[in-house]
Length: 130
Image (tube, rainbow, N blue to C red):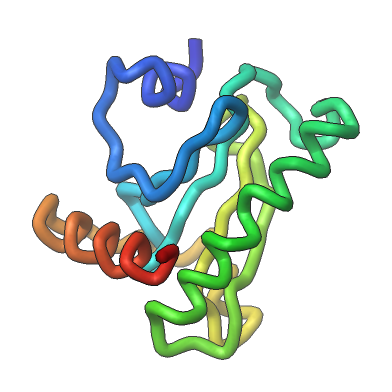
């Protein structure tokens, strides 16, 4: 069972942004930048392109309003999307407020944010979801 499956099962707490019966979006606790959100299918599959066509389509549709909320909540040119999948063997996408392609560089040091900072970022995004 991956760490994402444990988060989905409620065994590990998260700063939830959105959820439906198939997907969960929550803040990355080791973000590249404030506003870094993970979107995860609730089924445990390692690689994103191993998801069925309907899951692959639906993960993008689930992520769309979250991406718009991130763009609205943070001073950025757009919401970037990245699928790396090397750290956790559970399909997922990263949504990040970006101003350049370098903002998607996953070799950069991660931020160390307090629980209070994460809660403020969570609320900032949720408020823009409407």
